[in-house]
Amino acid sequence: MAITVAVAAARRRRAASRISASPSWLMALATRVVAISGLDETDLMVQALRAGAEGYLPKSSEPEELMPPRLALLGGWAVLPAELLAALVRPAHNGPPVTAVLDDEERRLLQLIAKGCRTVEIAEELRLSERTVKRLTASLLRKLRVSSRTEAAAVAGNAGLL
Image 1 (cartoon, rainbow, N blue to C red):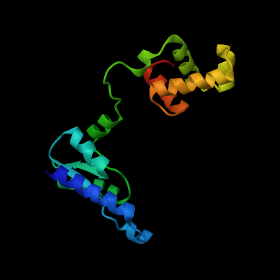
Image 2: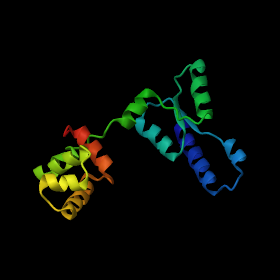
Image 3: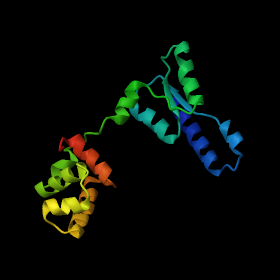
Image 4: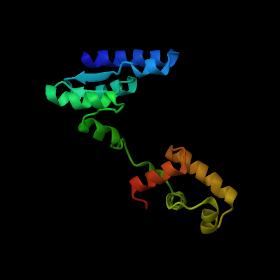
């Protein structure tokens, strides 16, 4: 129940901040929403954070353990339990890795991108025109569902292609 209230409060606060024309000093006094729950359901915690809560604290915390996170929130920090942070950072494994659908040429292109090679260098290495490399790179980015070469390099690193 408490998590549902926090989600609703966070949504109201986020909506109000979008339409507010208040002076900056007044916005500095804005309410900060922290979700507090006795449930250890990661989905509910994530829902609260997506709704705009700036932190999540378990009800099982001792009173003296609650003061430092609250002070951090007032300082503009987000506060999350270590388990929740690990769940948010951990990549989702909902099937085969995205690199499993790449053919050998796409893997080679991804490796060159991950090494930081420029389009000209990739064209020379693969003996292709720059225009073809740009087209292949755009296709690869779409296939990997990323929007930049940097994100593609991160995918390559996570897949062990480096």
